[in-house]
Amino acid sequence: MGMFDDRKRDVTRDEFEALALRHIDALYAAGLRLTRNERDAEDLVQDALLRAYRFFERFERGTNIKAWLFKILTNTFINKYRRTTKERSIVEGPEQETVQAHAASRDTAEQSLDPERWFFDRLLSDDVLKAVDALPIDFRMVVILADLQEFSYREIADIMDVPVGTVMSRLYRGRRLLQKALAQYAVDSGFVTEDASVEDLAEHRRRRAKGAE
Amino acid sequence: MTTLEPMPAPMECAELERSVEAYLDGEFDAREQAEAEVHLSGCERCRKLSEGAAALRTALRARLREAMGPASPAGRAPAALRLRVSTALARQRRPLWRRLLSPVPLATAAACAAGVLVVLATHAGGDGLVVEAVKKHHRGLPLEVTTASIGAEAIPGWFAGKLDFKPTPPRFQEVGAKVVGARLSHLREYPAAYIKYELARGQAGLFIVDDPERRFEATGREVRVGPRTLRVMNSRGYNVAVWRQDEIVYSLVSDLGEDDLFELVRSAQAR
Image (cartoon, rainbow over all chains, first blue to last red; front, top):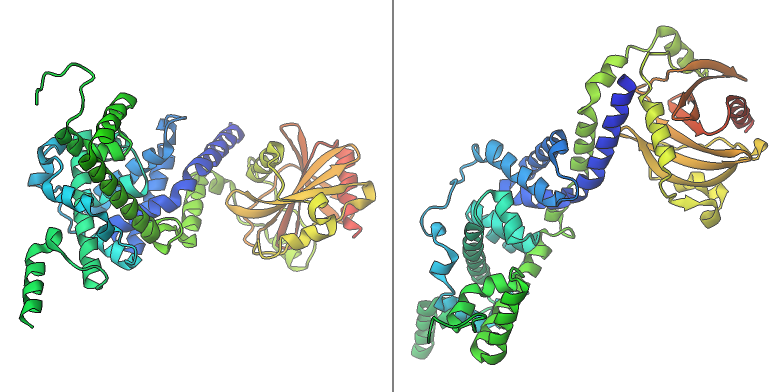
C-alpha cells in the first residue's frame, strides 16, 4: 500500500535524521581535513550521509552510529575523492612496523620529561590546521579520529579497516610528526626557543654565534 | 632482570615506555592499568615520563579542539550543507511523491490569483502531508513555548524570525479552544509552525506551512465550511482538515468528530 510505504519511510528518515545528523559537525570537521577544501568537504559529507541513509537498514541499532558514519565517510573519501587528489595512498616503510618495534624512543622520553615546551599554548589555529593538513593522510586520519573524536583503537581499526597494531603505530607516528610540526611553528613564531633535545645542531650554532659576539 | 616472573608480572621500565601511549589513551584493561600504576608509583623516572606524555597529549588535544572542534569555523558544518543534506534526504524518496503530483488545474490557479480560498485538487494517494502531520501531532513532542510561560497572545510573535514566513494562527476562541503552546516543526523538509490547542472535548494541533510552489496536495473529501473549502480526511483515528489561504497551507489535526471539527474551523473564520 502506498500510504503504508510512505509512513514507513517517514519513520526511517526521522530516525536517521535524529541519530545521524547530530554528527554532521564532526563529519564535516574530518571531511575538511581530508579534502582540504570546503567545497569537496561538503560534497563528501553529503555523499557519505546519503550513502548511510541508503544503507541505514544495515546499521545495527544500539551500536555506535558515529563510528559507523565515520567508516562510511572514510570509504566514500577513498572511493571517490582520493583517486582524484594527489595523495599517496599508503605510507610505505616504517609505517609497517609494529608499535613494539619502535617502543618509546629516546627522544620521546626526553621530550616527555620536559613537557613545558610542548604546550603550544600560543599557536594559532591556522598553524595547527596547516600542521594537521601536512600529515600524510593515513596519519592525519588516525590523529583526528583518536585525538579529536576520541575513538578507541578498536573503533579506529574498524573505521579504517586496518589492524589495531597499525592504528597504534600510525597514531604514534602521526602524533610525533604533528608535535614536531607544531614545535617548529612555535619556534618560527619565536615564543619557544629550540634546545638540544629538539634541534641540537641549531642550538649549538646559536650558542656558538652568541659566544662569538 | 628476569623474564620468568610469575603473573601478575611487575612491569619493567621498558615495558611501560612501550605502552605508555596505550595506557594514557585509556586502552588498558583494569589489570594492565593496575600493573602500570604499581610500577609508576615506585618509579620516579617513568612517572615523569608518563606525566610528561600526558601533558603533551592534553595540550595537543586542546589545540586540535580549538582549531577544528565544534566551536571553531573548521569544526562546524555550514548551514548551507545542513540544508543540502536535508533536502537531499527528502528527495531520496521523492520519486513516488513526485509521481503523485500533477500540474495545478487552471481553475485553481485562477481562483488563487483572485484571492479566493481554495483547496488543491484531489490526487489519489497524495496524502503525505496529512500522514506526516498526524504522525507529528500524535508523537506529542515537547512544546517550545507555552501559554503558561509566555501567554497565548505572544505565541504568534514567538515564531518571528524562526520561519521564512509569518504564520498567523487563526483564533478558535469562540468554541472554547485554548492555545496550549507551540513549537517549530516541519512537514517533509518544509518548516512549519505547530500550535497545540486544548478543546472542550479533546485536543488539536495546527500545522502552518508556507507553500508558494504548491508542493502540498490534499486529498480527501471536499467540504464547504462557510466561505472556505476544506479537505477532510481521517488518518490513524484523527480527523484532519486542510485548507489553503494564498500561499499558506493549514492542516488541523484533531481527535474531534467531523461536526465538531467543522465547527472549530468555522469559528476560525470569525477573527
